[in-house]
Length: 196
Image 1 (cartoon, rainbow, N blue to C red):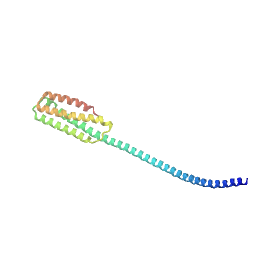
Image 2: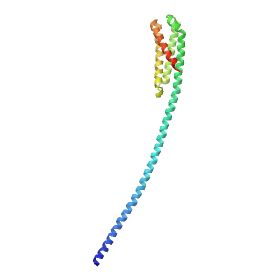
Image 3: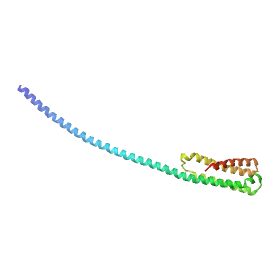
Protein backbone atom coordinates (compact mmCIF):
# COMPACT_ATOMS: atom_id res chain seq x y z
CA UNK A 1 0.00 0.00 0.00
CA UNK A 2 2.86 2.20 0.67
CA UNK A 3 3.98 1.66 -2.83
CA UNK A 4 0.56 2.61 -4.10
CA UNK A 5 0.49 5.80 -2.05
CA UNK A 6 3.97 6.70 -3.24
CA UNK A 7 2.97 5.97 -6.82
CA UNK A 8 -0.15 8.13 -6.45
CA UNK A 9 1.83 10.96 -4.88
CA UNK A 10 4.53 10.74 -7.53
CA UNK A 11 1.99 10.78 -10.33
CA UNK A 12 0.17 13.72 -8.66
CA UNK A 13 3.41 15.66 -8.48
CA UNK A 14 4.22 14.80 -12.10
CA UNK A 15 0.71 15.65 -13.24
CA UNK A 16 0.60 18.92 -11.32
CA UNK A 17 3.98 19.89 -12.75
CA UNK A 18 2.70 19.20 -16.26
CA UNK A 19 -0.57 21.02 -15.57
CA UNK A 20 1.15 24.22 -14.45
CA UNK A 21 2.95 24.44 -17.77
CA UNK A 22 -0.26 24.01 -19.70
CA UNK A 23 -2.12 26.49 -17.49
CA UNK A 24 0.64 29.05 -17.94
CA UNK A 25 0.61 28.51 -21.71
CA UNK A 26 -3.15 28.90 -21.76
CA UNK A 27 -2.91 32.08 -19.65
CA UNK A 28 -0.35 33.52 -22.08
CA UNK A 29 -2.52 32.57 -25.04
CA UNK A 30 -5.55 34.11 -23.32
CA UNK A 31 -3.61 37.33 -22.68
CA UNK A 32 -2.42 37.42 -26.32
CA UNK A 33 -5.95 36.85 -27.60
CA UNK A 34 -7.34 39.61 -25.36
CA UNK A 35 -4.67 41.98 -26.67
CA UNK A 36 -5.42 41.02 -30.29
CA UNK A 37 -9.14 41.41 -29.62
CA UNK A 38 -8.60 44.96 -28.27
CA UNK A 39 -6.49 45.82 -31.34
CA UNK A 40 -9.15 44.49 -33.70
CA UNK A 41 -11.92 46.36 -31.87
CA UNK A 42 -9.88 49.57 -32.20
CA UNK A 43 -9.33 48.90 -35.92
CA UNK A 44 -13.09 48.40 -36.37
CA UNK A 45 -13.77 51.69 -34.57
CA UNK A 46 -11.18 53.46 -36.74
CA UNK A 47 -12.75 52.01 -39.90
CA UNK A 48 -16.22 53.07 -38.75
CA UNK A 49 -14.92 56.61 -38.18
CA UNK A 50 -13.33 56.66 -41.62
CA UNK A 51 -16.54 55.33 -43.17
CA UNK A 52 -18.54 58.04 -41.40
CA UNK A 53 -16.09 60.69 -42.63
CA UNK A 54 -16.29 59.39 -46.22
CA UNK A 55 -20.10 59.38 -46.08
CA UNK A 56 -20.07 62.99 -44.87
CA UNK A 57 -17.69 63.94 -47.69
CA UNK A 58 -19.85 62.09 -50.21
CA UNK A 59 -22.96 63.87 -48.93
CA UNK A 60 -21.16 67.20 -49.12
CA UNK A 61 -20.02 66.52 -52.69
CA UNK A 62 -23.53 65.45 -53.76
CA UNK A 63 -24.94 68.60 -52.21
CA UNK A 64 -22.33 70.66 -54.02
CA UNK A 65 -23.18 68.97 -57.32
CA UNK A 66 -26.89 69.67 -56.83
CA UNK A 67 -26.14 73.30 -55.98
CA UNK A 68 -23.93 73.63 -59.07
CA UNK A 69 -26.68 72.16 -61.26
CA UNK A 70 -29.22 74.59 -59.78
CA UNK A 71 -26.86 77.49 -60.34
CA UNK A 72 -26.14 76.34 -63.88
CA UNK A 73 -29.87 76.04 -64.60
CA UNK A 74 -30.48 79.53 -63.18
CA UNK A 75 -27.67 80.97 -65.31
CA UNK A 76 -28.98 79.20 -68.39
CA UNK A 77 -32.52 80.38 -67.66
CA UNK A 78 -31.32 83.97 -67.42
CA UNK A 79 -29.26 83.69 -70.61
CA UNK A 80 -32.02 81.84 -72.44
CA UNK A 81 -34.73 84.31 -71.49
CA UNK A 82 -32.50 87.21 -72.47
CA UNK A 83 -31.54 85.65 -75.83
CA UNK A 84 -35.00 84.38 -76.75
CA UNK A 85 -36.66 87.68 -75.77
CA UNK A 86 -34.15 89.60 -77.87
CA UNK A 87 -34.72 87.20 -80.77
CA UNK A 88 -38.52 87.55 -80.58
CA UNK A 89 -38.43 91.34 -80.21
CA UNK A 90 -35.93 91.87 -83.03
CA UNK A 91 -37.86 89.46 -85.27
CA UNK A 92 -41.11 91.32 -84.55
CA UNK A 93 -39.35 94.59 -85.42
CA UNK A 94 -38.09 93.00 -88.63
CA UNK A 95 -41.60 91.78 -89.50
CA UNK A 96 -42.90 95.30 -88.82
CA UNK A 97 -40.33 96.59 -91.32
CA UNK A 98 -41.64 94.04 -93.80
CA UNK A 99 -45.27 95.04 -93.10
CA UNK A 100 -44.40 98.62 -94.15
CA UNK A 101 -43.44 97.41 -97.64
CA UNK A 102 -45.82 94.43 -97.83
CA UNK A 103 -48.13 96.12 -100.33
CA UNK A 104 -45.20 97.07 -102.57
CA UNK A 105 -43.88 93.48 -102.52
CA UNK A 106 -47.03 92.17 -104.18
CA UNK A 107 -47.58 95.07 -106.60
CA UNK A 108 -44.21 96.60 -107.55
CA UNK A 109 -41.85 93.97 -108.90
CA UNK A 110 -39.36 96.38 -110.45
CA UNK A 111 -39.02 98.79 -107.53
CA UNK A 112 -35.39 99.12 -106.41
CA UNK A 113 -36.34 100.54 -103.01
CA UNK A 114 -38.56 97.52 -102.28
CA UNK A 115 -35.84 95.18 -103.50
CA UNK A 116 -33.29 96.91 -101.25
CA UNK A 117 -35.67 96.82 -98.25
CA UNK A 118 -36.29 93.09 -98.77
CA UNK A 119 -32.52 92.49 -98.92
CA UNK A 120 -32.06 94.44 -95.68
CA UNK A 121 -34.90 92.58 -93.97
CA UNK A 122 -33.48 89.20 -95.00
CA UNK A 123 -29.95 90.15 -93.89
CA UNK A 124 -31.25 91.53 -90.60
CA UNK A 125 -33.17 88.31 -89.96
CA UNK A 126 -30.10 86.25 -90.77
CA UNK A 127 -28.11 88.32 -88.24
CA UNK A 128 -30.86 87.95 -85.62
CA UNK A 129 -30.99 84.18 -86.12
CA UNK A 130 -27.20 83.78 -86.03
CA UNK A 131 -26.94 85.91 -82.88
CA UNK A 132 -29.49 83.68 -81.13
CA UNK A 133 -27.73 80.49 -82.27
CA UNK A 134 -24.32 81.82 -81.23
CA UNK A 135 -25.60 82.73 -77.76
CA UNK A 136 -26.98 79.21 -77.29
CA UNK A 137 -24.03 77.40 -78.90
CA UNK A 138 -22.15 75.09 -76.57
CA UNK A 139 -24.59 75.62 -73.72
CA UNK A 140 -25.73 72.66 -71.67
CA UNK A 141 -29.47 72.95 -72.04
CA UNK A 142 -31.51 71.70 -69.05
CA UNK A 143 -34.29 69.18 -69.73
CA UNK A 144 -36.96 71.79 -68.96
CA UNK A 145 -35.80 73.94 -71.88
CA UNK A 146 -34.87 71.40 -74.55
CA UNK A 147 -38.28 71.35 -76.28
CA UNK A 148 -38.63 75.12 -76.11
CA UNK A 149 -35.10 75.57 -77.46
CA UNK A 150 -35.82 73.21 -80.38
CA UNK A 151 -39.00 75.17 -81.13
CA UNK A 152 -37.08 78.47 -81.08
CA UNK A 153 -34.43 77.08 -83.42
CA UNK A 154 -37.09 75.76 -85.77
CA UNK A 155 -38.90 79.10 -85.68
CA UNK A 156 -35.73 81.14 -86.24
CA UNK A 157 -34.67 78.94 -89.16
CA UNK A 158 -38.19 79.06 -90.60
CA UNK A 159 -38.41 82.85 -90.50
CA UNK A 160 -34.96 83.25 -91.99
CA UNK A 161 -35.84 80.82 -94.80
CA UNK A 162 -39.15 82.58 -95.51
CA UNK A 163 -37.44 85.97 -95.85
CA UNK A 164 -34.79 84.38 -98.07
CA UNK A 165 -37.42 82.72 -100.28
CA UNK A 166 -39.46 85.93 -100.39
CA UNK A 167 -36.39 87.92 -101.39
CA UNK A 168 -35.46 85.43 -104.12
CA UNK A 169 -39.05 85.19 -105.42
CA UNK A 170 -39.31 88.98 -105.55
CA UNK A 171 -36.03 89.24 -107.45
CA UNK A 172 -37.24 86.60 -109.93
CA UNK A 173 -40.62 88.38 -110.15
CA UNK A 174 -42.36 85.07 -109.34
CA UNK A 175 -45.75 86.14 -108.05
CA UNK A 176 -46.81 82.63 -106.93
CA UNK A 177 -43.62 82.12 -104.91
CA UNK A 178 -44.03 85.58 -103.39
CA UNK A 179 -47.61 84.71 -102.31
CA UNK A 180 -46.46 81.36 -100.91
CA UNK A 181 -43.70 83.05 -98.88
CA UNK A 182 -46.13 85.69 -97.60
CA UNK A 183 -48.54 82.96 -96.44
CA UNK A 184 -45.73 81.11 -94.67
CA UNK A 185 -44.58 84.36 -93.07
CA UNK A 186 -48.12 85.08 -91.83
CA UNK A 187 -48.24 81.63 -90.17
CA UNK A 188 -44.84 82.17 -88.56
CA UNK A 189 -45.86 85.66 -87.45
CA UNK A 190 -48.83 84.10 -85.63
CA UNK A 191 -46.46 81.65 -84.00
CA UNK A 192 -44.25 84.51 -82.81
CA UNK A 193 -47.31 86.33 -81.51
CA UNK A 194 -48.04 83.33 -79.27
CA UNK A 195 -44.66 83.63 -77.58
CA UNK A 196 -44.92 85.74 -74.47
